Image 1 (cartoon, one colour):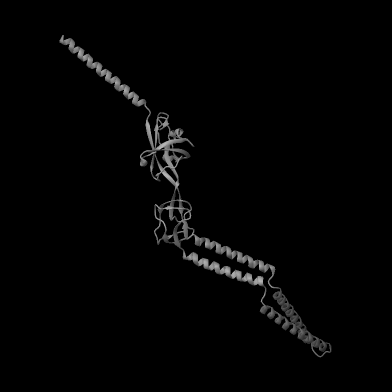
Image 2 (cartoon, helix red, strand yellow; image 1 turned 180 degrees about the vertical axis):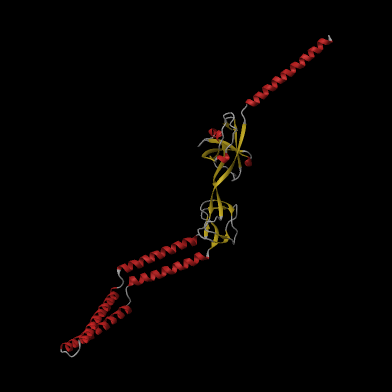
Length: 336
């Protein structure tokens, strides 16, 4: 009787072990067949613009600090550029000189200049009268045989010179009376226009010493310190446009089919208590071979490339800041 009881106990223990093994195998099968959950971590970003100057200078004063909110047109920083100010004075002086030349050309010749030209003409006329009379007397004496031919030639040359002098003096007088020619006036006007353009150009450089915000935003970074020199085009301030936030993910290409361009999906923000936000993709780009997932290629596998995916929130997310993590959850073939 005791032997039968012992056999029954052994059979019961064996049955229990068998059942436990079956249950364990079933549980392991369920676990292995259930979809694998994957997490992709992204990061919130904001559009930014850099504030820089067209001219080199020394930082005189900052009107903002990192973290300040700015509005379009607010003054951010002032530079000191003495070289530009010196060039502005030179350009203005050149413009004044060109303007004076144009005024002179448009107003005509002054009375004193006209009178001086008239006096020179009258003097030349008097010299011509004397040369004509002298030439007449010498000619008569030459024809009478009193003077040699050389004297007659000298008198003829003096007459020709006096005629040329009188003609030139008369032309100078006419020019003084008539004033500047039309071509001279046009040239003077062109010089003034060019000088004004030079002044406008230098004044635009002077305006670059007072830098303002080009759009609303938040000062995210200030590079130099007050008193330091900055070069042409060197970044001075970064401004983040907080109303233009977006999220970037690095995703393997085998997951892209579940996201796709212009598709909506949900993600969570740990820094905001796991708040769920809805995003829509607008940008995808291959990051290159350096970001590929290498496969052993023993069973038909292939290298998976990594893509940068950018998405925008469908609605403004309060308290979302650049740099915050954004978590994308994938379970099986679904983004959850």
